[in-house]
Image (cartoon, rainbow, N blue to C red; front, top):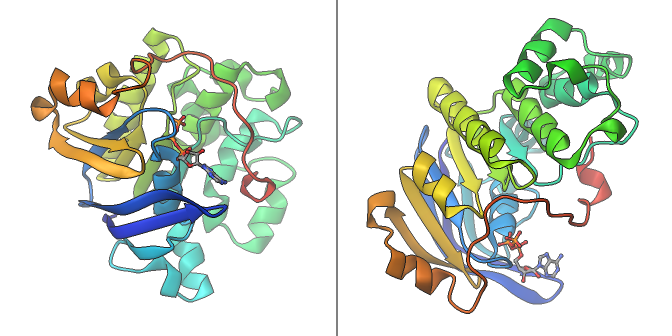
Length: 265
Ligand SMILES: Nc1ncnc2c1ncn2[C@@H]1O[C@H](COP(=O)(O)OP(=O)(O)OP(=O)(O)O)[C@@H](O)[C@H]1O
């Protein structure tokens, strides 16, 4: 799915968060978003998945402006967009199998959604997806019994199981050790490539971004600082991007507030 932002502004709680943001990813393209903490990366991803609506400018998904679509078409569009959240909004008592199976609920009929409350029908498919993130043994565990890194991988498995045409990932490996972080970013990039899906991922690790993405989009203070092939992103550009901030951190545990209730599964 093509994703384009044209001259997008976003204001939250009366505060300008993004200004004049423009870029496009063609269907099947992959790019990493990098930039200092608070630059606007999460906000930009939430515009792309239609959780947030721009104050000015236009977001285009495929060939549609999501905000002018009738409700049924907007629902179908959203079902084809996957988001991996930094802190997956998973109810503590929900079992991992259900959390992963919920990735496809957006496409399910109301009856099938209701039936899913009693457990996933496609247990084999869910188990196979969990094996891809090395969590096969957690199939029936309640989410409350998982570590932060394991929860992050459940969020990844859910997006893999959904198999969307546009995959957005917001620091999806921030709680993983370096070996798992590397493997998980590679898994998401390989999966998207194999399916011809578009992938936009925010990362604090410039090293991971450079290793896995052909294109890097730098965000600073709510604006696009650069949008370049990885070979063109040199140390001087990175120093400017992160100037005045701590050096870009490598993945590590990072507790943060949960998402609003209406984003929970
Ligand atoms: N609901 C909100 N109301 C007001 N300001 C907000 C709100 N949500 C985010 N912001 C502000 O918007 C700016 C961008 O936040 P955002 O989470 O998009 O940044 P980020 O680049 O993803 O940061 P990080 O790397 O730390 O996750 C920050 O200054 C933040 O304080």
